[in-house]
Image (cartoon, rainbow, N blue to C red):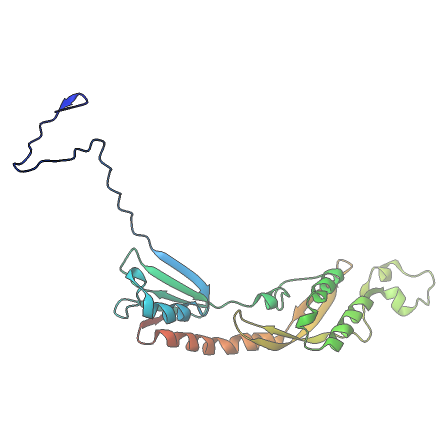
Length: 246
Protein backbone atom coordinates (compact mmCIF):
# COMPACT_ATOMS: atom_id res chain seq x y z
CA UNK A 1 0.00 0.00 0.00
CA UNK A 2 1.33 3.48 -0.86
CA UNK A 3 0.64 6.59 1.22
CA UNK A 4 2.03 9.84 -0.08
CA UNK A 5 5.64 9.25 -1.15
CA UNK A 6 6.15 6.26 1.13
CA UNK A 7 5.32 2.60 0.72
CA UNK A 8 3.69 1.04 3.76
CA UNK A 9 3.45 -2.74 4.15
CA UNK A 10 0.49 -3.86 6.20
CA UNK A 11 0.14 -7.39 7.48
CA UNK A 12 -3.43 -8.36 8.25
CA UNK A 13 -3.81 -11.22 10.74
CA UNK A 14 -5.76 -14.22 9.56
CA UNK A 15 -9.44 -13.88 10.28
CA UNK A 16 -9.47 -10.06 10.21
CA UNK A 17 -11.81 -8.85 7.51
CA UNK A 18 -11.73 -5.11 8.22
CA UNK A 19 -9.20 -2.61 9.52
CA UNK A 20 -8.89 1.20 9.72
CA UNK A 21 -5.79 3.09 8.67
CA UNK A 22 -5.37 6.59 10.11
CA UNK A 23 -2.95 9.05 8.57
CA UNK A 24 -1.51 12.28 9.93
CA UNK A 25 0.98 13.65 12.44
CA UNK A 26 0.82 12.29 15.97
CA UNK A 27 -0.14 14.82 18.62
CA UNK A 28 2.75 15.71 20.89
CA UNK A 29 2.14 14.85 24.51
CA UNK A 30 1.45 17.78 26.83
CA UNK A 31 4.51 19.10 28.57
CA UNK A 32 4.58 18.65 32.29
CA UNK A 33 4.19 21.96 34.10
CA UNK A 34 6.61 22.81 36.86
CA UNK A 35 4.95 22.77 40.24
CA UNK A 36 4.63 26.23 41.80
CA UNK A 37 4.32 27.39 45.35
CA UNK A 38 1.18 29.11 46.60
CA UNK A 39 1.46 32.21 48.81
CA UNK A 40 -1.70 33.54 50.44
CA UNK A 41 -1.94 36.74 52.48
CA UNK A 42 -4.82 38.15 54.48
CA UNK A 43 -5.79 39.89 57.71
CA UNK A 44 -4.89 38.48 61.12
CA UNK A 45 -7.71 35.91 60.82
CA UNK A 46 -6.29 34.40 57.60
CA UNK A 47 -4.49 31.41 59.14
CA UNK A 48 -7.45 30.49 61.35
CA UNK A 49 -9.87 30.77 58.42
CA UNK A 50 -7.60 28.64 56.23
CA UNK A 51 -7.30 25.96 58.89
CA UNK A 52 -11.05 25.90 59.46
CA UNK A 53 -11.78 25.01 55.82
CA UNK A 54 -8.66 23.19 54.60
CA UNK A 55 -8.43 20.82 57.55
CA UNK A 56 -11.58 19.16 56.21
CA UNK A 57 -11.39 19.57 52.44
CA UNK A 58 -7.79 20.24 51.33
CA UNK A 59 -5.89 18.14 48.81
CA UNK A 60 -2.27 17.99 47.65
CA UNK A 61 0.06 20.74 48.83
CA UNK A 62 -2.75 22.50 50.72
CA UNK A 63 -3.23 19.75 53.28
CA UNK A 64 -2.30 20.91 56.81
CA UNK A 65 0.02 18.19 58.14
CA UNK A 66 1.27 18.66 61.70
CA UNK A 67 4.30 16.50 60.98
CA UNK A 68 5.48 18.91 58.27
CA UNK A 69 3.96 22.35 58.84
CA UNK A 70 5.67 25.16 60.78
CA UNK A 71 4.06 28.31 62.19
CA UNK A 72 6.24 31.42 62.59
CA UNK A 73 5.00 34.22 64.86
CA UNK A 74 6.47 37.72 64.77
CA UNK A 75 4.68 40.24 66.96
CA UNK A 76 7.00 43.05 65.90
CA UNK A 77 5.99 42.54 62.27
CA UNK A 78 2.43 41.70 63.43
CA UNK A 79 2.38 38.45 61.43
CA UNK A 80 1.55 34.77 61.76
CA UNK A 81 2.94 32.66 58.89
CA UNK A 82 1.77 29.09 58.29
CA UNK A 83 4.28 27.17 56.12
CA UNK A 84 2.69 23.83 55.23
CA UNK A 85 5.90 22.14 54.06
CA UNK A 86 9.18 24.06 54.48
CA UNK A 87 11.18 21.33 52.68
CA UNK A 88 9.01 21.42 49.57
CA UNK A 89 9.65 24.03 46.86
CA UNK A 90 6.06 23.67 45.67
CA UNK A 91 4.35 24.47 48.93
CA UNK A 92 1.62 26.64 50.38
CA UNK A 93 2.23 29.47 52.84
CA UNK A 94 -0.47 31.53 54.51
CA UNK A 95 0.40 34.89 56.06
CA UNK A 96 -1.94 36.56 58.54
CA UNK A 97 -1.13 40.20 59.30
CA UNK A 98 -2.47 42.44 62.05
CA UNK A 99 -2.95 45.97 60.73
CA UNK A 100 -4.41 49.20 62.01
CA UNK A 101 -7.84 49.95 60.60
CA UNK A 102 -8.24 52.34 57.68
CA UNK A 103 -10.66 54.39 59.82
CA UNK A 104 -7.88 55.02 62.32
CA UNK A 105 -5.00 55.44 59.87
CA UNK A 106 -6.60 58.26 57.93
CA UNK A 107 -6.29 60.64 60.90
CA UNK A 108 -2.53 60.18 61.30
CA UNK A 109 -2.86 60.14 65.10
CA UNK A 110 0.53 60.04 66.87
CA UNK A 111 2.20 60.17 63.46
CA UNK A 112 4.04 63.01 61.77
CA UNK A 113 0.96 64.02 59.84
CA UNK A 114 0.29 67.76 59.84
CA UNK A 115 -2.72 69.77 58.68
CA UNK A 116 -3.50 73.35 57.93
CA UNK A 117 -6.87 74.49 59.24
CA UNK A 118 -8.66 73.86 55.96
CA UNK A 119 -7.25 70.35 55.71
CA UNK A 120 -8.19 69.39 59.27
CA UNK A 121 -11.69 70.80 58.90
CA UNK A 122 -12.16 68.75 55.74
CA UNK A 123 -10.89 65.55 57.38
CA UNK A 124 -13.18 65.96 60.37
CA UNK A 125 -16.14 67.00 58.22
CA UNK A 126 -16.14 63.67 56.42
CA UNK A 127 -15.60 61.75 59.67
CA UNK A 128 -18.58 63.02 61.63
CA UNK A 129 -20.04 59.52 61.94
CA UNK A 130 -16.92 58.40 63.85
CA UNK A 131 -17.36 60.95 66.63
CA UNK A 132 -18.74 59.54 69.86
CA UNK A 133 -20.67 62.74 70.56
CA UNK A 134 -22.24 64.98 67.93
CA UNK A 135 -22.38 67.94 70.33
CA UNK A 136 -18.61 67.73 70.79
CA UNK A 137 -18.18 67.41 67.03
CA UNK A 138 -20.02 70.68 66.46
CA UNK A 139 -18.01 72.40 69.19
CA UNK A 140 -14.69 71.21 67.72
CA UNK A 141 -15.62 72.39 64.23
CA UNK A 142 -16.74 75.79 65.56
CA UNK A 143 -13.53 76.15 67.57
CA UNK A 144 -11.35 75.44 64.54
CA UNK A 145 -13.18 78.10 62.57
CA UNK A 146 -12.35 80.68 65.26
CA UNK A 147 -8.64 79.94 65.60
CA UNK A 148 -6.45 82.73 64.26
CA UNK A 149 -2.96 84.12 64.60
CA UNK A 150 -2.41 87.23 66.70
CA UNK A 151 0.61 89.50 66.59
CA UNK A 152 2.39 90.67 69.71
CA UNK A 153 1.36 94.21 68.87
CA UNK A 154 -2.31 93.21 68.82
CA UNK A 155 -1.99 91.48 72.18
CA UNK A 156 -0.49 94.57 73.77
CA UNK A 157 -3.16 96.64 72.05
CA UNK A 158 -0.25 98.85 71.19
CA UNK A 159 0.23 101.68 73.64
CA UNK A 160 2.71 102.74 71.01
CA UNK A 161 0.44 103.60 68.09
CA UNK A 162 3.37 103.38 65.73
CA UNK A 163 3.80 99.72 66.70
CA UNK A 164 7.09 97.91 66.56
CA UNK A 165 8.31 95.96 63.59
CA UNK A 166 9.92 93.24 65.71
CA UNK A 167 6.75 92.75 67.74
CA UNK A 168 4.61 92.61 64.62
CA UNK A 169 6.72 89.72 63.38
CA UNK A 170 5.99 87.76 66.58
CA UNK A 171 2.78 85.77 66.42
CA UNK A 172 0.92 83.24 68.50
CA UNK A 173 -2.34 81.33 68.19
CA UNK A 174 -5.39 83.10 69.52
CA UNK A 175 -7.95 80.44 70.44
CA UNK A 176 -10.19 81.40 73.37
CA UNK A 177 -12.43 78.59 74.66
CA UNK A 178 -10.88 76.17 72.17
CA UNK A 179 -12.34 72.63 72.35
CA UNK A 180 -9.20 70.57 71.86
CA UNK A 181 -10.31 67.04 72.85
CA UNK A 182 -12.91 64.68 71.44
CA UNK A 183 -13.64 60.94 71.41
CA UNK A 184 -13.55 58.80 68.27
CA UNK A 185 -15.45 55.53 68.05
CA UNK A 186 -13.26 53.52 65.65
CA UNK A 187 -11.77 50.04 65.31
CA UNK A 188 -8.06 50.28 66.10
CA UNK A 189 -7.23 47.06 64.24
CA UNK A 190 -8.68 45.81 60.96
CA UNK A 191 -11.35 43.18 61.48
CA UNK A 192 -12.21 44.08 65.10
CA UNK A 193 -15.00 46.07 66.80
CA UNK A 194 -14.76 49.81 67.39
CA UNK A 195 -13.07 51.29 70.46
CA UNK A 196 -13.50 54.67 72.15
CA UNK A 197 -10.29 56.70 71.71
CA UNK A 198 -9.75 60.16 73.22
CA UNK A 199 -7.93 62.45 70.80
CA UNK A 200 -6.34 65.87 71.32
CA UNK A 201 -5.91 68.57 68.69
CA UNK A 202 -2.46 70.14 68.97
CA UNK A 203 -1.27 73.24 67.13
CA UNK A 204 1.53 75.76 66.89
CA UNK A 205 2.79 78.50 64.59
CA UNK A 206 5.40 77.54 61.99
CA UNK A 207 6.61 79.99 59.37
CA UNK A 208 3.74 82.34 60.25
CA UNK A 209 1.18 79.59 59.65
CA UNK A 210 -0.88 77.55 62.11
CA UNK A 211 -0.06 73.84 61.91
CA UNK A 212 -2.34 71.19 63.45
CA UNK A 213 -1.79 67.53 64.36
CA UNK A 214 -3.60 64.87 66.41
CA UNK A 215 -2.32 62.99 69.47
CA UNK A 216 -3.74 60.29 71.73
CA UNK A 217 -1.98 58.81 74.74
CA UNK A 218 -4.78 56.31 75.18
CA UNK A 219 -4.43 54.99 71.63
CA UNK A 220 -0.93 53.65 72.21
CA UNK A 221 -2.13 51.90 75.38
CA UNK A 222 -5.05 50.26 73.56
CA UNK A 223 -2.90 49.12 70.62
CA UNK A 224 -0.30 47.54 72.89
CA UNK A 225 -2.78 45.94 75.27
CA UNK A 226 -4.66 44.05 72.56
CA UNK A 227 -1.76 42.40 70.72
CA UNK A 228 -1.18 39.44 73.05
CA UNK A 229 -4.86 38.58 73.29
CA UNK A 230 -5.36 38.74 69.53
CA UNK A 231 -2.37 36.51 68.77
CA UNK A 232 -3.29 33.99 71.46
CA UNK A 233 -6.81 33.67 70.03
CA UNK A 234 -5.57 33.18 66.45
CA UNK A 235 -2.93 30.61 67.42
CA UNK A 236 -5.59 28.29 68.86
CA UNK A 237 -6.31 27.24 65.27
CA UNK A 238 -2.82 25.71 64.95
CA UNK A 239 -2.53 23.97 68.31
CA UNK A 240 -0.27 20.93 68.02
CA UNK A 241 1.79 22.44 65.20
CA UNK A 242 5.43 23.51 65.57
CA UNK A 243 5.26 27.20 66.53
CA UNK A 244 8.34 29.41 66.40
CA UNK A 245 8.29 32.89 67.98
CA UNK A 246 10.67 35.43 66.51
